[in-house]
Amino acid sequence: MMLDRQNAWELLCEYTKGKSLRQHAIAVEAAMRACAPRYGGAEIDADEWGIVGLLHDFDYEMFPDPDAGGHPFKGANILCGRGYPDRVIRAIMGHASYTGVPRDTVMARALFATDELCGFLVACALVRPSRSLDDLEVSSVKKKLKDKAFARTVNRDDIRDGAAELGVDMDEHIRFVIDALRPIQRELGLGGAAEN
Image (cartoon, helix red, strand yellow):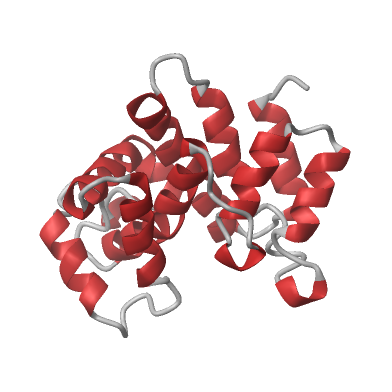
C-alpha cells in the first residue's frame, strides 16, 4: 500500500470528530515529520513518519477503552483491514505501553517520545499571555512538568521515558519539538490571543 496523507486525513476525520483531538494529531504529525530526518536519517520517509503521527490516536474518540478492545487495538485492526504496513501499525500500537508491543524501531520510539510532549507543549502555550509557542522556553516547560495540577492528564513518566528511549537529552528534546510545532501553531489554535 502506498501511504497517502490525504487518505490518512480522511481516515482520521471519519473516526475523530473533535477539533482538539484532530489538532493533537496534526501536532504529533508535525513532530514526527521533524523527527524522521533527525533520528531516522536522510533516507527515511518523512511522510510515513508523519502519517504515523497523524493516525496514532484516530480510534481514541470512538473506542477509548482499551479493556474493551478499544484504542489502539481497534485502530490497529482498522489499519490492517485498510492495508497499512505492519511497521506503521506496530509503531502506533507501541505508543501505548499497556499493549505490550515493544518500541523496537526508531519510528516507534519517536512516536512515544513526541505524543504526550506535544499535548503538554500546547497546554503550556495556551496559558501564556501570548497563547503562542513563539515565547515558550524550555525552562517554563520543565517548571510546568513539576506542577502535577497543570495538564494533569498528561503522563509525565511517558514524556521522560520517551526522551530516554530515543536517547536524547530532555532539554534538547523539548526545544526540538517546540521548534517543530511553531510553523503550524495556528492550526493548533495557538499564535496570539488577539487572533483566536
